[in-house]
Image 1: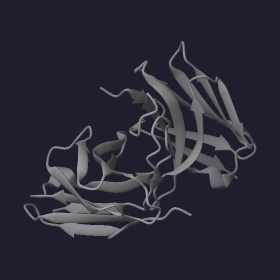
Image 2 (image 1 turned 90 degrees about the vertical axis):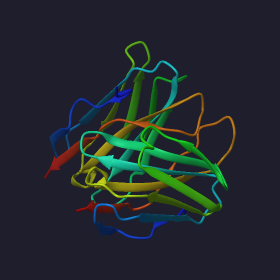
Image 3 (image 1 turned 180 degrees about the vertical axis):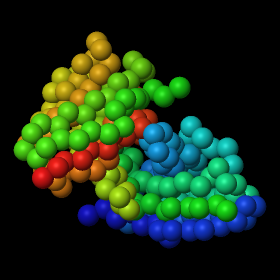
Image 4 (image 1 turned 180 degrees about the horizontal axis):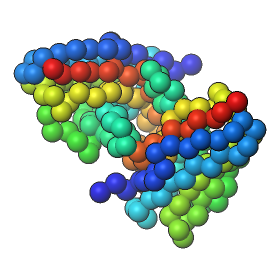
Length: 115
Length: 112
């Protein structure tokens, strides 16, 4: 079974703090993703990584950065948290077979509240 | 502008009846479509998918229909069970790529 774990289920931070969300997958997947989920908006892609040290911006990268130093770990960083970043953050991974779509496997999510 | 839309935020169905969840898309480059199911406090899990070369895919109680000319797909659950109560997300991918575009989700409630 693919397992994607996220470092925290719930997190409360103050405006201006630097926030790190960690994600680890155990299936040697090439691709990893960070989404945020907001009511009525579904899941929106923040960043995507297809290899170690490689990253691509998703639909809403502003205010976020990412780090992928090891294949199994993908970190999302909020450099200076703001209240509009209060959301559910979901990490996902998928294998990297070229030329075909690959199912994404999700972690349980981190509910972040910025006060 | 949302490229994948689920216009019904919620749906309530009696146990044993059919649930029909709908999804519309605007990007004609989408060629692979998926449905994910999400329970509270859990991540989404893959449910069923369909390639644009097909118009129907069935897996047990779940069937997905694709109407490319209308840019519309639907998920049918027959018979509906209380354990099906969850939020369902429609998602689409273009050119067999790795990135997904999600709809806003539909909360399904199946009443016993």
